[in-house]
Image 1: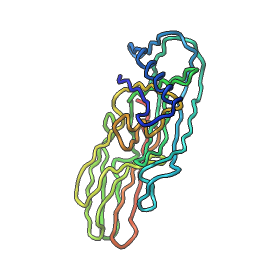
Image 2: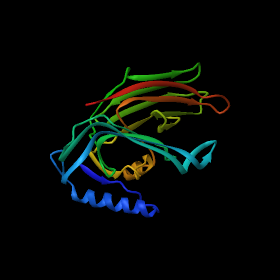
Image 3: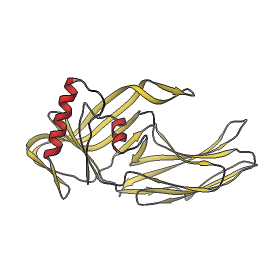
Image 4: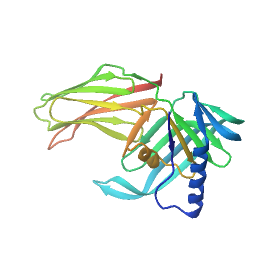
Length: 257
């Protein structure tokens, strides 16, 4: 399991710099043994799910859409399930969800623990079962035909794109979360795509005042990210030079494996 100490690298206020040092020191002192976190001492801890969402207040725009957030509105909440006093925290596989748009806006839902001082210990177990209602998606007009065949994998899914275009200029295939999109395929010839969710077990140490969806995506080295459990959607699109694009969608589910 990879441990990530999630603290911002940008300029911080004095109070947040102090919080950053607190997180770094705490992260250094904890150990992990057989999916059990060992704390340096007993702590009063809340067990539950951390929810964090962000939306853009001020950002750069292209074509009427934000592509880079400068100022965000961030909401955070820890949904408590139980209170415990312990120095050992067993990690049980649970569902999670992470969606971060390229603009930096997004939503995070992660299982874990909250200490009284606001420190968060969150985690991800990449156990998935991908279920598509059908093996392929078809989109056709009188002149154009597009077929996408899906193949679930251990950590995601592959797709084969087979277009036969006369009027359409190109094809787009997009993965859609609740408010986030990822481009899977673009072009006018036959091809394939391979999309993977987070595949490595993750232990995330941060503080409720520091964590944001954008910081989480940055920690994974991603500009945008869709991963987790629940319902998702794949959208196929035929794009035309002088008329509205044709679309067809298929919803699929991801369960905890």
